[in-house]
Structure formats: structure tokens, C-alpha cells
Amino acid sequence: MPTLEKAGVCCLAFAILGRNRLYNTESSKPDLSFVRARRSTLIVQRITFHLNMEQVVFESVRKIFRHRPAMFNWLGRERSGETLALKGLSFSAGGSEVIALLGPNGSGKTTTLKLLSTLLLPDAGSVRVGSFDTRNHPYHVRRQVGVAVATERSFFPRLSARENLDFFATLDEVAHTERNVRINQVLQDTGLEEQVDTLVMKFSSGMYQRLGIARALMKRPSVLLLDEPTRSLDAATTAHFWTTIRALSQRGTTILLATHNFAEAAAVAHRILLLHRGELLADRKIALTETAESIRSFYFNTTGEVDESHAASLHRMEP
Amino acid sequence: MTSTLDKLYAILRRDLLTAIRYRSGFVVNIVGVFTELAAFYFLSRAIGPGFRPGGVEFFPFLLVGTGLYTFFLMSAQAFLSAMQEAQQTGTLEVLMTTSTAPAELIVLSAISAFAGNLVNLLVYLFAGVAVFRAATHANLLSCILVLSFSLTIALSFGIAAASLQVAFQKGSAVLWLFGSGLWFLSGTMFPVQSLPRPLELLARALPLTYAIEGMRKALLDGQSVADMAPTLVILAGFATVLLPSTLATLSWSLQRARQNGTLSFY
Image 1 (cartoon, rainbow over the protein chains, first blue to last red):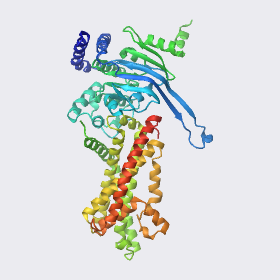
Image 2 (cartoon, rainbow over the protein chains, first blue to last red; image 1 turned 135 degrees about the vertical axis):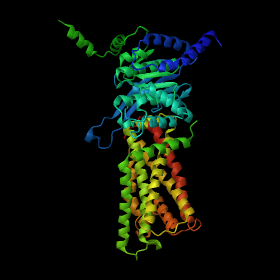
Image 3 (cartoon, rainbow over the protein chains, first blue to last red; image 1 turned 45 degrees about the vertical axis):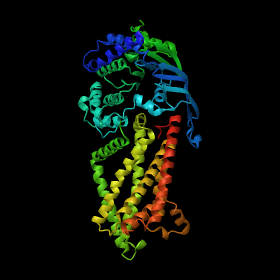
Image 4 (cartoon, each protein chain N blue to C red; image 1 turned 30 degrees about the horizontal axis):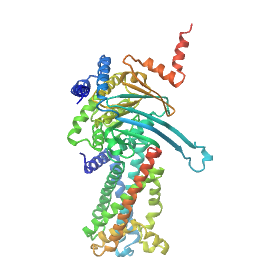
């Protein structure tokens, strides 16, 4: 085994052994270890990249949504034609990489995540997870991919948090003997341990969202897809969630995160994919010194969109 | 490794927990069963003992016909409602990203919905016999065979409804078929021999007609498997053709929805 790979194995083992410590960080504490954690994640990521290359591959992926209006369309004027959601998208992501998908509404972020989760099939090109193509081996892909979508109410309302997680874990083929341990672990990670036996119909929006993240973590996926995961979360839970994301990345999980939150991208991502109208405008690594503000500037400069909040703040500063 | 049986248990448990936590729904269901039975009991008394379709009393005749018809209709309705609700809440999409194959998931969910309604059917028949004194002369083996084939056929209808729902968002078309034409064509309330010849021929093309006829022969007439072999063979034929073909349709509609991005459309 080459020296570099030996070093990679050691680092990976160290990261795995240290995961509990990272997992058990209390949500109420300020996240002062952020830069240190980012740095160690990057080191591990760079080395393990050689061990676990290209966990996710998009090759010239095109996705078209066709609008077929119902009969008597003159009555309601439903839109016809088609939307080109992705125009030959190509990128790859290595093991333990965290990639932030940025872009305005309708740019193709959710379509990208849906293609990876096998909910959609590409019209051209290929999508692979590990060595499995999503079209030909959807079962093997789904075994590796965990999804936390923004849809709040995607649970069974008259089951408790534990019962919901147990149900989805069974469908995800998590061994019966492991389910309880994992449920307790993910509920602790998402700060829901006190609501374990509460019916989810009594949950708030933020709690639903946390439970969605817990569900995605239950099968310990090698690829985690997150669609605006912190949209309804409070500040402390968001900080704790980012810590969890960094810990997962250190364990080798590839994470694709669709977000509009520049602070989130700066906090957890190693790379940004900037999508605009189905095209990849930029694929850029994030430096350790990167801030939410610099990503924001990059976003608006690259997409050409007008940053009205920035313009407004300049306007306020005028004498 | 989680087996298909574990998954089925998980789905049955989910549906049972959901059902018993709708406390009022449970009570309403029981009241509904007794109200319906009472209505049919007094209807048969009003008509009088002279009317004996197929040589059996009218109330037991109605008990079997309406029981099986309601089982077919309510099972398909319950399954379809659950599926539409899952589409609306986004649960369906999440379920489709689990390690369980979508077609397997839908079939297991359908089995659970139909199992719940099978319990309803058994309660209905038991209450009819125990409370309203419906005269029966059951052959247990024949009853089990008729019930098994009927369950398979009903399951196929449920899967067909799910396929239509996924492909065209029109699963309720199957319910319309049940609700509008089947109840009077399938001999639910009177023998199909009473229908004009063309309608009787149409009735003979429906699996529900044979399911109801078979259950009357097995439960009320006590016919043995050998006696009612022709009915059982026809039911087996329907089950053998309908289940694989509806499963194939379901696979096609799921693939189509993944291609078109319409899985969550409702």
C-alpha cells in the first residue's frame, strides 16, 4: 500500500474513533471549534479522496420536464412546452466532500438531488453513486443515499418520532438489533431526545425538519442529500447541525447540500457548485478563510443577479 | 438484513397504530357495521320469508353480497386515500427513496390496507351471524379458498388503482367503476340471473360476481371444494391473470413517473 494511502487509512481511523466526541457536542455551547474542525476535515478529506474517489458522478446529465396540458386548455391556459431543468450537467464528488449547491429558484438544485435519490431519471447522460448507475441499479443506489427534503410533513402524524424512525429504518433495511441504538443516536444528534415518544402531529416546523434530518441519518448513508436542511431551525440547532455535518464528512460521508444560506455554505462546504437555469456556472473550492459575505459576492457577481439587500445597505449609508 | 416479512409487519403496525389512535373513527366504524346490518335485516323482514334467492334466506344472501362488495370497495378506497395523502404530504417521495423497491412497497401497503378491511369483513359476517341470526351452513375449506382468491383479486384492483394514480393521477377511476356499476351487476343484492341476458353476460365477466357467488355457496350452502370447483377455477384464473398484469402495470407507471418527474403529482 502506498505511503499516502496508509496515512489516509490512519487519518480515517482516527476520524472514526473520534466521531462520538464530535457527535456529542452540546447544542447550547457556542461553536468555537469551527475553524479547527474545518481544517481537520479538509486534511482528512484530501487524503481520503485518494481512497474513495468519485462517490457521486454526473456525466452530461440533461433533464427535461414536459408540460402536457389537459384537454380544453383554452379554458384555463395551462402552460405547454417543456422546461430544460438541467443542460448537460457534469461534476463529481469524492468521499467525505461536502458540496453546497447554490443557485436561484429553478436553477436545478432540487432536480440534481432528485436524480441522485432515484426519484427522477435523466433524459440523457448518467448519474452514478459509487459504481452504481441510478437507472440500472436504483436499489443499490438507494441503499447508499440518505435524503432529507424540505417537505415538512412527510411523516405519519399519528406515530411518535421513535415509531416513525423505526418504520423508515425497517424499510431502509437497518438490522432490527441496531435500530434502537441508532434511533437514540440520531435523536440526540438532532436534539429531539425529549420528544422521542411524542406523536409527530404535535411537532413544530423546526422539529419536523430535525426529524427529517434524523431519518436521513438512520441508515448511515455514504451519500447524504440535504435540501435546505436548516431552513426552519433555530440558531443553536443550526450550529449543532453544522457540527454533525462536519463529523459525518470526517467519517467519509459525501454530502450534497442545496441551500440559499451563504453562512451555511461557508460553515460546512468544501466546494460550491453554482447552478443557474440548469447550467453549472461555477465549481469552486472554498478556502479556509472564506466567509458568508465573500460567497455572497461571488454568487451575485457570477449569476449577474442584483443584490438588492446590498444596494439597500449602500443606500442607507448615503448622507 | 430486513426481510419482506419484517417490512410487512412494520407497515401493518403503522396502519394499526394509526387506526387505533383515531379513537372516534374506531367507534364510528363499529356503529356503521351494526346500522348497515340492521337496515338489511329489516329490509329482508319487510320483503318476507317467501323470497329465497338461490334457495337461501334473503338476509344471509344480502350479508354475503354486501359484505364482500364493501370489502372490495373500502379496501381499494382506503389504499388509494392513503396513497393520495402520501403524495400530498411528500411522504410518498421519501418512501420511494428508501432501500425498499417502490413496487414492493406499494404491494405491501396494499396488503396492509386489505388486511385491515378483511378484519372489517370478518366482523361484519360474524355480527350478522351472531347478532342478527343469519342462517349459515359453512364449509370452512371452501370459505378459505374463496376468501384467498377474492383477496388476491381485490389486491389486484388496489394495485391497478395505485398504478392509475401514479401514472395519470386518476386512481379514483377504479373506485368509480366499483361504486357505479359493480354493485348491481355483481349480484350484491339480487341474483345476476334476474338481470336481462346482455347484462347477465356482462356480470359473468366480473370477478366480483364469482367471489360473491362462491362465498354464498361456501358459507350459506356448505358446498365442498369439489362441488364448487368451477367457481373456484374461475376465481383462480382471475387471480392468476390480474395480479401479475397489474404488477407489471405498476412497474411501468412508476418508471414513467420517475422519467417524467410526476411521482408526487396528485
